[in-house]
Length: 375
Ligand SMILES: *Cc1c(COP(=O)(O)O)cnc(C)c1O
Image (cartoon, rainbow, N blue to C red; front, side, top):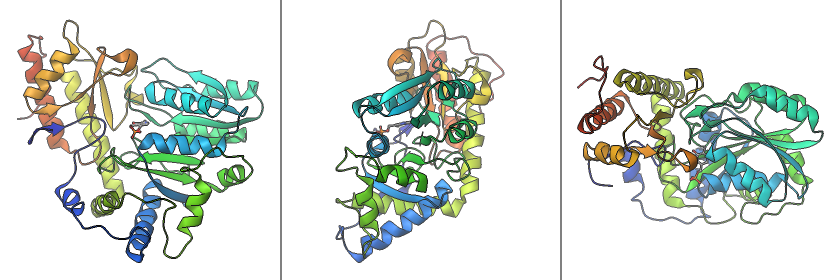
């Protein structure tokens, strides 16, 4: 990244100066007391962010590693897994479940819409003995937030495990793991936590442990039983070498989050998301999600305006100092996305909206005049 360029993509997100500095520390033993204390302290605070009393582990792997860990520890060939799909990341869960031999039942909605809980209910009523249900809380590819709480009530009344990918929302949005009875909940480091890519977090409920214990697990690096055993050692540790530098970064990032206050962090994400949506609409552009109530609070997906080329637009926005994302897979060229997770405040949203407005004006797009954008 060019210096002074503002990174507004849905992960990796830009880091605080103190986090950058924390990572320049010397190495320590990965099985020593100091690492043990750091690990324990980070896990205790992560549990508060997750609002859970469940076990929680830190994996040295990007978010997809945590997705694989969830499936690998739960699924045996032939097990029925219901995968809800509404975009690229939720479809990834389906692919992983298939790799582990699951009999996948898919409940999908069109990209840009949220999962219909009624369809989940119908599929569970129709298929007995579904072992687990996967839900992507925040579908980063479409800017849509799913109603996990409602889906959870249905899943729980059918006795299945609930696996939730909260990779791009945990730490930015309200995801109370225990209240919503999420059995395996996943988060990633380079999204709302504002540390570099390379760590992911996974919480495991008692009910999930019961299933894990009686499952013939096809996992080695991600065998969660080993993570639990290692954490119970003195000093606490991970089975394989943890990314120590990223643990330094996590410690600092959690300090920043707790200094601000977890509720304030979430409120800030809601505020900047609304500012982004209002700004986009005031320019005369349209949000991609089909209804505003289902819009994500960490990423805003916008329909590409008629007659404007997606790559050209993003190039122009970059010339005005801001990096935004395009669409993925079938949404390539159809949408662009603004990430507003992690350290993002009103200031960065205003800079981004101004850059988009200038870029559109460069490309001769007729801007709506009432623009909300402040200098
Ligand atoms: C980013 C993301 C992932 C994948 O994470 P990686 O760190 O790229 O492996 C999975 N799910 C969602 C919802 C994401 O936003």
